[in-house]
Image 1 (tube, rainbow, N blue to C red):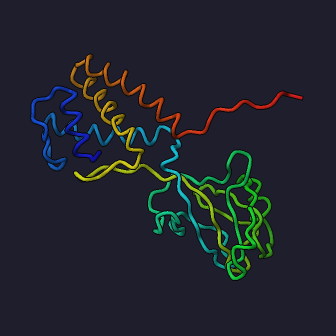
Image 2: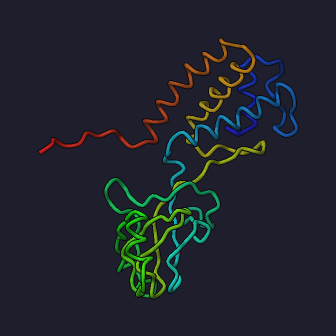
Image 3: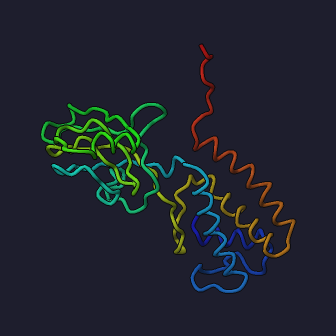
Amino acid sequence: MTYLSLCQDTRRECRVAGTSTTPSTVVGQTGRLGDIVAWVAQAYTEIQEAKDWNWLRSTFTVNTVANDDTYAYGDCTDSRLSAVITRFSKWWLRNGDESNITLYLTSAGVGGENYLTPIDWIDFRERYKRGTQTTGQPIHVAIDPQGNLVLGPKPDAIYTINGEYQMSPQTLTADADVPEMPTRFHSLIMYRAMEKYGAANGAPEVFNRGGYEGGKKVRALERNQLPDVTLNGPLT
């Protein structure tokens, strides 16, 4: 579904006057249609911000610079999209208890790829930001207070770093914009927008239907997009 079609469906479900093509565009709308256009965009943003959804998880790569240990997301390329990262939420340094960041000497090739060990910033600072440091092949990775990736020790050559990160929310702005979330869950955006309409316009029947149908849809989305819940082993 497109942004425009979501707005048209929301108008219909909220019983706002119009035809199947109302609104005809998301641009320049005012009054009740303007509210619907805004609520649909807000609903999608809020859905994206609610959880670390799989559809917003992506991969990155960056080549280090000798004697430079700090890398912002804008230094990295999204290796799935083949573009510099512009939408960033957080790094995924771990998958569960396992490292999720790898490194290899670029000139030697991927055959020498190994995992970096994630450590917290306080530990990193004590190890690599005090006194005289010697460059070498990085073995540790951390996140500094500014949200940058930091490597220790400082690279002594060009290394290739690969890993995963979470993208920030997609913003719907144009008629033809299509939400990145899985297609079969697009109606959740409409249901969340219906709740906003019902709350703002004193329409409890619209609010309640949006909440009921949206609740079913979000639970299905969570099953599809979030890790399975597992139980730890017995205590010994």
